[in-house]
Image 1: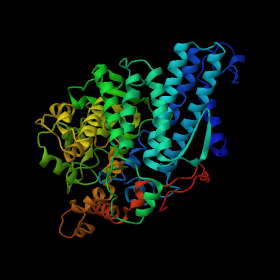
Image 2 (image 1 turned 180 degrees about the vertical axis):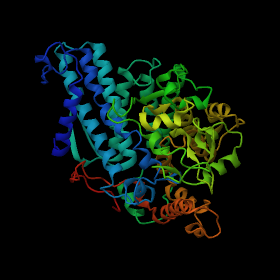
Image 3 (image 1 turned 120 degrees about the horizontal axis):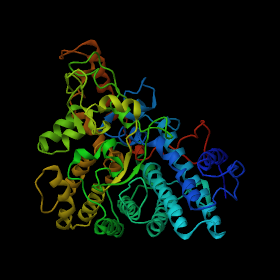
Image 4 (image 1 turned 45 degrees about the vertical axis):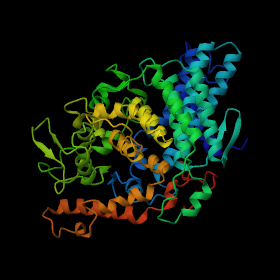
Length: 547
């Protein structure tokens, strides 16, 4: 099997960190060897849990690609040559940090999962691990490996595939081969894992089924091949949408498995989905299906900085603020809020997604966020379970990241049915989301209504770019920024507007990012650039078209 030496070396270091969590009674057995690293069920699970160390640093990082490479978000993360602004302007390159970080950590997690599966199999054959322990540990490892491959194939297209049984870390496989591996892993996980028991931090049978529904929806919308991307790499024209009905049928089947298990449900209060008091299913409503645990910077691989990046300087801005400090990520323009409000003024999700005003619990002052005072705030980046969360979470970064929730399963089923031409059947799952949101039901949702529902339900939950890839509307959706309030040239300066010098700099920057999105987006952005390794070295994987 071909090996990339850098990946192997880093993986070995990571594995040692994972092994150190295994319990033992004396110093001798703490010495890690192939023979004693998995000695019982508990150490098998502990070994697999080490894979999470590669997922935790990515919780907020995904937004710096998936949301910034859309019309939804811009970034003022430090200087304009920092990786956040670079992604915001569609100027990413192989050395851009968020691409480097996500790609490498996902593959390192795969490497660690492979090693864990191999060791657990050996320990099981030697009688050290029970059948139940084997099922739980290997089921989790295959679940996490499949999730990593799904993220990678969505963002980078053809990628190397390797497992405990072999493969290459440098030779790119076809899209179908990657999805075949994803389906094989998730089908195995489905058979090995137990039913959802109310703890979303633990992969379950229903979580595997939900991921299978997601995978078949993505696969069913025919991801572009490398050759197809090459044909449009320098173009500003989207490719034609196409689909595979057999795979969309599979998406419906697996969504139905989750639904018919009756283990999951929508939380009746949308607001109660986001925050520390609501994580790990503390409300017992069973909407969170799988989450990445976070206990803060000092306690896990990296705290979830989603809050920090969206809400870095909460009360320095707005009409009662002292300045215009620029957050690491910003809502791209007022129009995202105002268009939604115009379309669906009674949608209960709007006020939780876009904060346009908020009270400072320390001063009692109300801060408004609409131009020309500021732009709206990403409400999902704020721990909504505490009155004073705007202050607390900047330091603690301990809100779990939701990877899959039951609402997605319902919308996957509805969309797959609509793509199959069974619009009236799609009404039931689709209307469950609308009813919770306080909206009127429909008898047969259209494809356009389905697409908009993804925005209403999941804005800033790391779906924007991935959905544009599926629907083949990346370029046209990004170019919608030309209609945004701050796109016209008169926002380059204070001409025609009354604001302070700090406001002028803020809104000029917004204008510049919107214009850059419009000018820079190309067909090549249907793929991310194959990055370097974590230390800047060449990983030996052929580059995507246009980079």
